[in-house]
Image 1: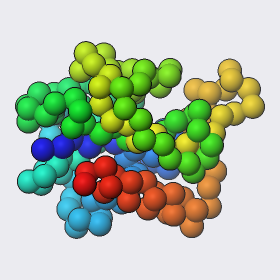
Image 2 (image 1 turned 180 degrees about the vertical axis):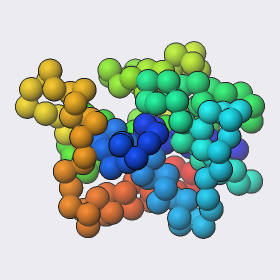
Image 3 (image 1 turned 135 degrees about the vertical axis):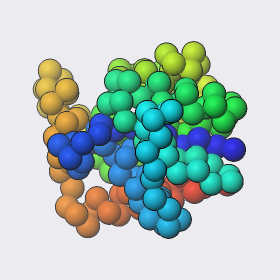
Image 4 (image 1 turned 90 degrees about the vertical axis):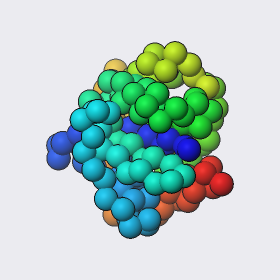
Length: 170
């Protein structure tokens, strides 16, 4: 069993923001497998459960994502190496992807929360590039702004990330 957690913030206000790429990719994946997310108060998130994997969108805001991930991993007895966390990454160029294992948070508060709650950084990450603003003091606002890709380019980027998740699962 694998756990795939897409990081983001709940609410319409954040839907198309850079910080919500993890949620957006899981939505594309859910559409592809023709499943709908269901609310799970136990995990403080939205989940889709199949025989091979669980998709999880933590609903406790980015900085508290680790609670949902750790709770689901513990409940389903999923080891860290079978967890995939999908998130935005300011250190990568816009629309690029990178797969990593056993890395620190690099300042990403959602990833930091997952590491803290799991007590381990030994999980897989699909990092989705959003670029960096010219002024580092603007990072907090930057990640909460709408992503600056055309609708067509955003769909292409999300599809590429969804395909990467499929490859990781295999």
